Length: 177
Image 1 (spheres, rainbow, N blue to C red):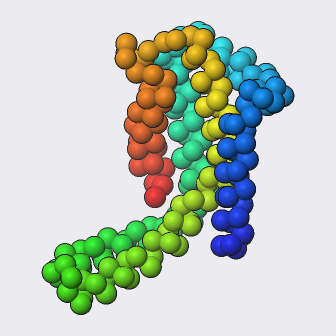
Image 2: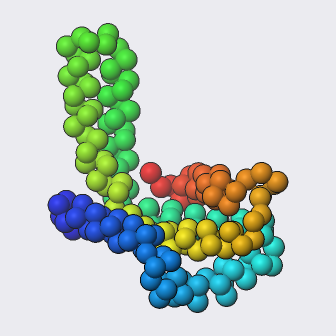
């Protein structure tokens, strides 16, 4: 996939994701289709035990996202680019801010951010729509259940914290950049 095509596809997926979120209640077939799939699976898990069920769902989503990240990005190139960035940062520390050398290194560092960003964004093509659908479903589910994890965390904060923890561990285990 060429660079222009991948950004166009990412943009299209983001537009579709936003449309799904915006029309969730307006177009019943979207909501009903997602409910038909998630109520007997994720819903059953949450109905069984809310904390354990949500933890399992967060873990499974983290596995899914990490595997997509690993297999849809060029890990070798990303590792090399991050290594170059780290070396540039170390070299920049040797020079005074504003000096000619520091400015040149800074410009070189800025030039590599774009290509790194493009490589890192590719997983969005595969994950944006499923995540939007799932988050919309979670919003509806927890609007009815009205439960706070550990007495004070909403489902979103619980998801974000759990995802951060599981993703960090999975990235180390699976050697994902």
